[in-house]
Image (cartoon, rainbow, N blue to C red; front, top):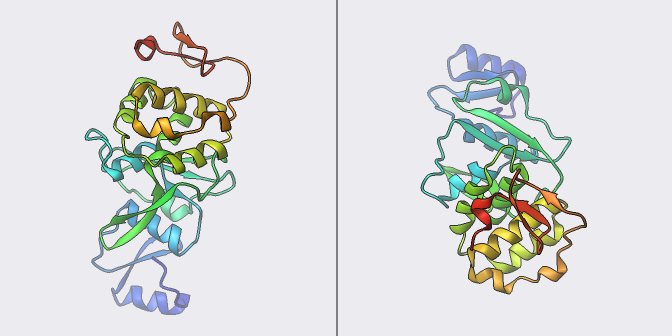
Length: 228
């Protein structure tokens, strides 16, 4: 991407065939093949924008489930409410559909990890945060039954990290669903959580028409999830 040199020198390098333009404000070295993760690396490291890989895409990077592929048709990115993707990144044809979700339901840096890609690392949600981001998108943009299938595969989460995320989470829907699914999955780490410290708010929340109400977590879920 940008090499930190003057516009005149950049143009000289381009005329000489040493650099190629990727879009307004972004350059690549001639011969380099840059994918969307390489572009995101530039956004994170050079532009210092708080945008990270999240939800299903982050889980795919972690290999948490065999059916969650890294090279899928869409890339789910998360950022605080005011952050925007640079035009050069947004307008470039990366071969994937970019989905930026602006939300403050979790603190921007909590639960993020570094993921190796080629010769660099990018910031992505750890498995617990990625699971919560999937639930944030549910049920409109992420199927609840599929979400539970993902939760079943998260057997090695650290209770302390999960606890902190739950206590800092501002979405009652996410907290209710996460605790319900973790409880139903029967993971060992769930037994070490302190649900009494997690506020679930008040009032019932229906997340499935014709579903089953779960009084412990104040939610109505699909019938497929309500059975023991």
